[in-house]
Amino acid sequence: MRHALKPLAFALLLAGGAVPPSCSPERGDVCIVVISDLNGSYGSTRYEPQVHQAVRMIREVWRPELVLAAGDLIAGQKPSLPDDSVRAMWAAFDSAVARPLRDARIPFGFTLGNHDGSAHPAHRRDRAFAVAHWKSRRTGVSFVDSAHFPLYYSFRQGDVFVLVWDASFAGTVGELPMMRWVREQLSAEPARSARHRLVLGHLPLYAVAEGRNRPGEVLQEPDSLRRILERHGVHTYVSGHHHAYYPGRRGALELLHTGALGQGARPLLGSSAPPRQTVTILDFHFRADSVAYTTYAFDRSGLSLVQLRELPPVVRGINGAIVRRDLPDTARGQQ
Image (cartoon, rainbow, N blue to C red; front, top):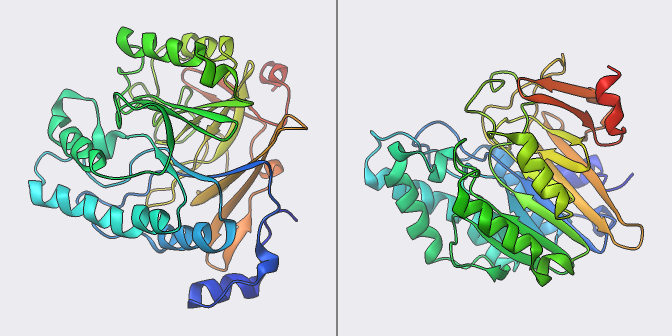
């Protein structure tokens, strides 16, 4: 079983012991670990045990070429929080997540979410703190364009091109200056010459989770945005915010809805399965032109592998239906 963790290995990890070498994952040409929505309650400077466990797994077991985070790294978005609380949250994130990855020399790509750097006018203070924090930190990525970092930027990890856009608020991505930049980036040589192209943003194109199936919780004009990405050969749009794991597709675009690693996991629309905190490993196999997903859920007994068959074949939200990534897009109309 790919990326399988023996119970002894996980117990040793939680106890602070060494992890047997046999637990190292089978690797693709590029291995990327995807996490999202790490935050706890408003103002919290503490992270769930699963966040700390995932960071240790990344450092000690999986050792990917890159970690991607789909937003909500801290628990802001509350104007009544004093400035010192916002600073303390960023310091706590750096201590718990960013610094361990830096020390392990694992590049870290991220997008801002509504809780850490929302583009909504009511949260200018939080956004300013986020920009100030990241301007003084190294992420280890090989930038293609960092002129607007950390709000939006692009980089390459080997033969994978990653475009990070500002999807921290439902009204941001469709703004003309942003989309002009998106088209320019995806048309330029660094993106065109890459074997795979990913786009990373906080809000998803299509709704997948209970409690988030409403306007404002998804991006506006999703089909229009999707067609732009399809025309430029984007393989996958990676998002967070809905706190529910679902690897889907619509048209030619794959859609990785990343589950929450912090508090507030949510059930999928139309599913009776309980919500789970998850982390996903992407292995890019260039010769086969494929991307393999391995997703773990954090359970009381440790890590369990999430099987595709456990997930609904189709998820239907307010702004469209998406099909599970192992099924043809035509399956959307057959359910």
